[in-house]
Length: 329
Image (cartoon, rainbow, N blue to C red; front, side, top):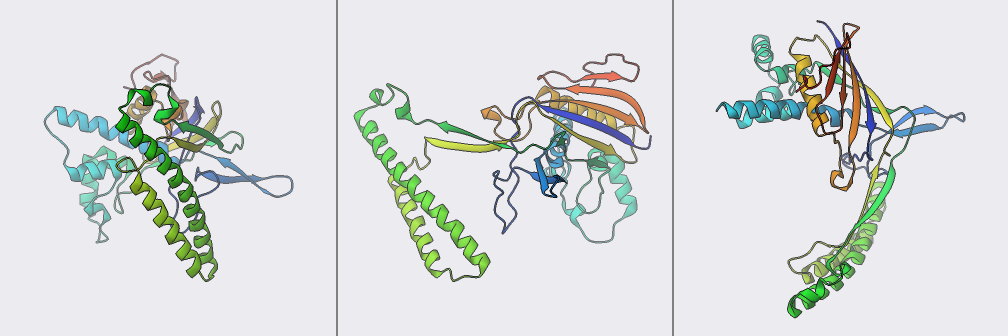
């Protein structure tokens, strides 16, 4: 076995919400840092952009699914993972893999032989991954949409305040008023923070903006203090961005220098994704459910098809068309 290519097609059953970390010194993009990439040009030569499912999201799920399964088996046998191994297998980080000293090739080979996860996914600087995962891009360029919701407060439900004691009712009403003032002050502080960041980047004098920003932050802190031990607003507007439901995203996984044990691990992970077919953020708000199809080619020959989704076991069909439902588990 030399190379395994798994061509994947993922369909968004619900909206797909992804939030990427903001790089230091750079503002979030206008989609709350949903991942955006340029793909192609229009007739006038302008860049065309699209949202996508990052490779790290799917790759991370697959790795965690495999390791958690192996950790559960080890714990059941009384052979619990050490903290060091949990870090190495789940995250790919440990002291040895981060070392810049000369690599002991014999020890490296032994590690690969003894640890299928590190052998496939890699670890740190020393163990190179044999698994390549592409971004999954929609078949047509599509940008994420803003979705807004609200989390209600106690007074938004009839009868709740009347059922409280008078002391707690008065306490709540005082907190609610302080929270309204806090929210207004926080908006001012955030606006000043943006102006201050832009002024620093432009090399302008920021002394006056800095003082105004500090004063706004002090006002926010004062209102938070008035709210007592309930400093978080219970009535909160929530806005996030998501790719719409019902779109198809395509990508692939490639295993180089494939070994017999690689494909069963990936099938196990895809089965776990089928049993809980959700990716990304805002899962509690209806986002993230997906379905998918994966065609497995070994050295160029189609050997099996894997269908996932529906909160049930993956369905695996081999090259002859025999139904192997559940074997991925």
